[in-house]
Amino acid sequence: MKKIILATFALLGVMSVNAQKNSILLGTDFSYKRVNGFDNKKANEFTFSPILAYEVADNWFVGAKTSLSYSESSEKTTDASLVTVKNKTKDYTTKVGGFVRYYHPFSETFGIYGDLGAGYQQYRSDVTVRDYSTGLTSDTPSKRAREYGYYIDFVPALFINFKNNFGLNVSFGGVEWNDTKTNTASDYKNYSKSKDFDFNFGKSIKVGVTKKFSF
Image (tube, rainbow, N blue to C red; front, side, top):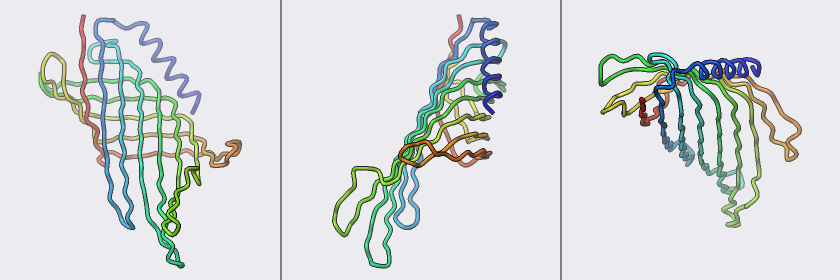
């Protein structure tokens, strides 16, 4: 997986050197998700993903992308002794990588594009517990996990051009391959490896803005 990521970045570098340097693409995606589930479980998630790209050929772009995500969830549980506790989880995810985009316009207003990207990611999860029988909340996370590794993803999206190549982009998920290591020990020396394929097309929505500067 690491060799694939390095090869992808090498290809991005070669394409950037040969870029026409007549157009720059700036944009970002935002997403917010709120879930109210069973057993008093609630979750909020925010994602911010800025991009910077160069046009290397007609409707072909090569660039860099960063994704920052924060989510917070809580769940109340009651054991056999009728003691109620509230578990609060905070998750932080950072992704840094490159991508190749092809844009296909249907008209001056509408078009679609696909992003093929790869990069490095880090994830942190902290869980704190509040005991309702004592009213105390532990400031020190009772469970802490770290995850890091590589990803490859493909995301299709719709672009709506408002004026002068400035418009709205909307995506509904995509596909992603992850190769990561996860550990939960306090010394972070012991870890487990995992590889997974995630198909989330149609399960999420991201909305953002993009502006193409030509010179």
